[in-house]
Amino acid sequence: MALQTKKTSEESIDQDSRAHFRTAARRAYKDQKKHQIDNQQIAEMLPLVHKVVQRVIIYIKPPLSKEDLVSAGTLGLVRAARDYDPAHKVRFSTYAYIRIRGAILDELRKWSFVPPSVDKQIGRALQAGMEIAEQTGLQPTDTQLAEKLDIPLNKLYAIFENTRAKQFVSIDTAQPDDLPLTESLAEPNTNTPLDQAQKKELVAELAAAITQLEQKQRRIIILYYQQQLTMKQIAEVFEITEPRVSQLHASALFNLSLKLRQFKDGK
Image (tube, rainbow, N blue to C red):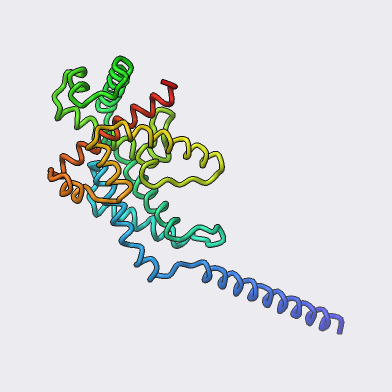
């Protein structure tokens, strides 16, 4: 009789445990379903992947194909959908953008397309630009910088574009001397009060630096970052070729980098 009572008691406890686990599982599933981004929402965000990839290709000439970058960005989107939690009070589109962009940059960082020799050229150009600015009190023109470096203009523009690529891929892992300028101009993500204060100071410095750019470069920066025009559209506005717009854009970013280094050094 005692054995029967003990067995009945154990069965009751076992049933209670199973009921508890079923309730917990249902609650977990309900929470997961509530947080889950469905396939339709993922599909609606796919154009964002292509938009981010297109902007990357404009900035740099990656060794990977556009399809490779789209694949990386799509994987970032799927992971964003899996990990998204609305309790953090961030829109899914914002969270997805960060994860897409991060996945693409992670893929790019696996490839060394700014070799040490090019890195040295970038350093020499930055140093020469700083010296001209200190001597004249003005930002160097492309011609002045090319003459100081004793290189043709087309090679200088190649250096500008490599500098732009380096800045772009340095975002999120920037060293003290690698100003994440393209991130500051394009799509900043500030969280803490310190981040916001630093961002506010940088924006003020950038605004001052932009006003000192040559007129055409200044207009390109405004059209590209503020008006969200593409390089092709800007080329149509100025009635010049798209590669020329890219050169002027890269030159403008280079000069902004120089100016920000002067601000940083208190000059």
